[in-house]
Length: 183
Image (cartoon, rainbow, N blue to C red):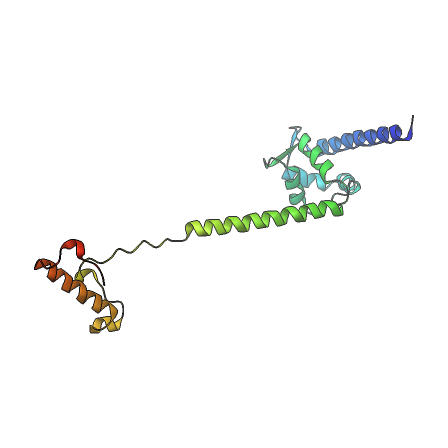
């Protein structure tokens, strides 16, 4: 055999042994024999020094059992089966590499930008729109806007007076209704 075949064979054997060990740890935690472990089963299992030592050998930090359990519970069912446990342990074992951290930072930046764009789009969609103003058609519809308007010399009063004049002229027949307009 050449060196390459020996290395591949050794790697397969290590992987097979890893799977056997992870399944053994899972079955130790699955005290009910249901094929599922809950968070409480997981926490109880982590009290066992052998399980702690095994996770330490995998270079898995078990300081926060709830976080680790959430990482193992891929389908968020509240329980972990042997397949999830095995896959999670394979994915989480070993030390984090700089490449993995860079990929994660890139994904977080992309998600942050996507959330910011979504927030802006939702804010724009929810912003109240101003209803278009229709022109006043009679003096009664014109309301003063400030104290000067109440005194009769502001812009509202001028518009009201002009509309009133046009309305009176229309009633006398001097203006057709189609010529009514605001000044």
